[in-house]
Image 1: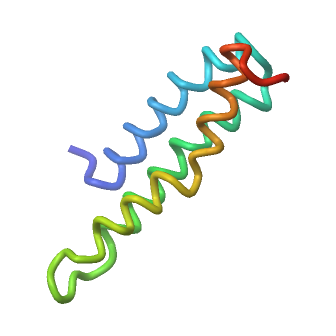
Image 2: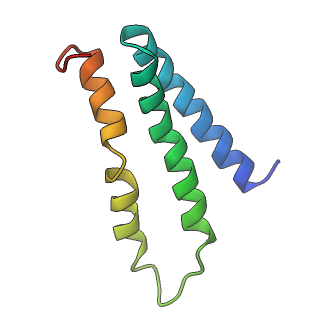
Length: 89
């Protein structure tokens, strides 16, 4: 209804908030912000991926997806481990 960009931003913003809150409650604001920022970064990367014109098939999409998910993964993993008590705050 509001377009692809609005849909992607809204979806990842809601996901960021749903992941931010439990981490924030169980640890602190810094870890919650790290967790939420992972999902906001994903929104930017999904929009970027959709805006790049495709040449020569879809060969670059899989490597880009791996990098897009794994490069910012510390923003997700470290707060989760801290919330579980496996890393010090």
